[in-house]
Length: 217
Image (cartoon, rainbow, N blue to C red; front, top):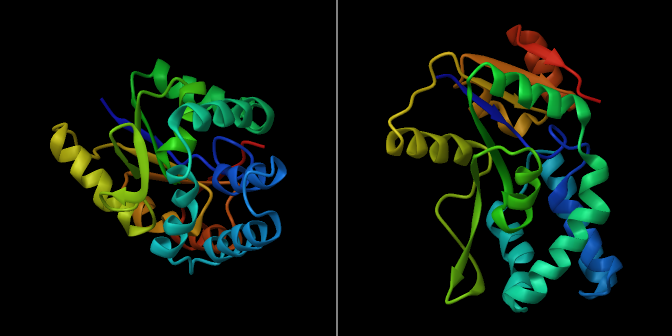
C-alpha cells in the first residue's frame, strides 16, 4: 500500500485556512480587530517568504483558543467551515484524492496549520490520516501551548518519520502534493514529489529537479 500525502492550504483548498481563521476572528469582532489583523497578515507574509518564526506564530495563533471554552470555539469553527472553507474546496482536488483512494493508496494530509482549524476540513475529504501542529488540550481546555514538533518545514519530515515508525510503514512509491517551498524538505523525501499550483520558489525548484507540476485550480 503506497502513501499519498497532501498538503492542505492552497493545495486541496484554494486559500490558507490558518490566515482565513484569523480574518474570520476579526470579522466576527472576537479579537482586537486592527492589531490582530495586522499581526495575522504579517505572519502570513513571513510564511510565504519562508521566514516565519513558528514559535512566535503559534503563541499568537493558539492564544485565542485558550481564552474560550470548547463549546464556543466549536460553534465559531462550524460557522467558519460553512462560510469560509466549503466554497474553497477544489473539485479537482477531490477527484485526485478519490483517484488515490480507488488505487488502494493510504491517504494522509500533513499541514502546518493547527489541528483545531484543520481537522474538520480534512474530514470534508474523508482522509483518515492527518499530521498537524498539535495544540495542547488539558481537561477539555486549550492551554495556548503546543505539543510535539510543529508540523512546519523540516518538522513535517520529523512528524512523518515518527508516524511511519509507529505504524510500521515506509515511503516506498509514496507521493506528496504541495504548493509551498516550505515543504521542499518533505517533497525531497518521497518517491513522487508533485508541485501543485506552486509558489514562485517551489515552481523554480520543481523545474530544476524535474518534478511534476500540476494545477488543481
